Length: 327
Image (cartoon, rainbow, N blue to C red; front, side, top):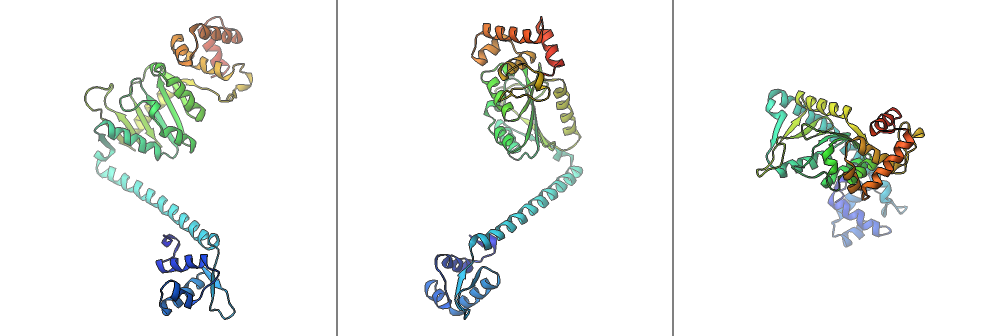
C-alpha cells in the first residue's frame, strides 16, 4: 500500500509495527514479525539511513519511527509532483501523436458517434475533462439529452470552466428551462438567446466538438460527428462566435449586483431577468407560466420598467436598455 512513497512490503510491515510500538530492535522484529536476524538488521539499517526511523538508544540497537506526516508526507508530495509532471508530459506527447496522426490520416479528424448513448457519453466525458471553456449552441427539442439533465455543467462551472451558451428562443419556453438557465447563470454561465440556430453544437477547449447529424429526434438512432482540432473545427467555432455576437444576453444577478454599468441601473434582479427574457423574444404568456405569476403581473412589471426607462413602447425600452447597458 505504501510502495508509492518508497516502502517495500517488508519495510511497510516494520514501519507500521514501529508506529504502534515505542521502539524496537532486531530481536523484537524476529519475534513479532517473524523475520530472520539478517533481514531484520538490513531493514532497520536501510530505513534509518533513509530517515524513516531513528536510533532510540545510545548503543544504536533500538529504533523508533519518525512521524508519518514528516517522512511520508514529504515523499507523497514529491510523488504527486512527479505524477503531475508525468501527466503533463503524457498530454503533450498525446497531442503531438494526434497531430501527426491527423496529418497522416485525415479520417482521424472526424469520427461518427453511432447512437444516442455514444453521443451522451462523449458529451459527459468532454465536459468532465474540460479545462478552460465550453461553447454550446442549444436548439429546441433535444435529441440526446435535455439541458436540464446536464449534470456535468454545474460541476465544471464550480471548478472554473467557462461556459458560453446560445439558446434558441423557443427552447426557453419549454417547461423548466428558464429556471434551469437562471441557475446556470448564477453559477457563472454566460447565456444568450437568438430566434433560430442552424445546428446543435458543443465544443470543449477549442480542441474537440460534437455536432449532431440530424435536426430532429426520430424513430432511428441519432448520430453525431466528433470533430477534432483542424479547419473544420475552426469553422464550427467561427459559426458559434457569429451567433454569439448577435445574440441577446440573458443575465440574472443572484444578489442584485450587476456587471458593467450596474451603478445606473434601477432594476432589481427579478426585473432585470424579466427584461432579458422580453428582449430575447419570449412571449408574455410563456414568461408568466415559467415565473409562476399571472400575465397581468408580467404586464404590470413591464409597465413599471418602461416608466423607469422613460419608454413609451417595448421597442423604446429595448433600445434604452441597450444604450444604458442594463443587459
